[in-house]
Image (tube, rainbow, N blue to C red):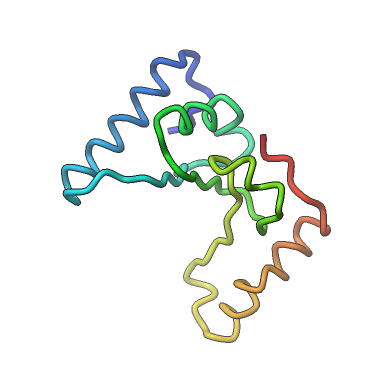
Length: 115
């Protein structure tokens, strides 16, 4: 669900809480970290990041490609991620992806504005 397009804060909160409850029931443990399933700039923003923090999530990942910078410690519910998909399963590709080099080039070496 694209949470940013939901007009009501209460509905966004309920959606995240329901997802957490489903995972908790299945795993027997309350999730402390969130990954926005659709977390690009049009799907998750400051409101969603704030609600995740208010619900007690320690961290939350967006789907925005990027590497971590020191400033991200102030935005723990709006973290970028490195996407690994079926095209990059070879060990040498994973090493390059994990280094952050690909996302740094993709982002033209700019720090992302996440909040």
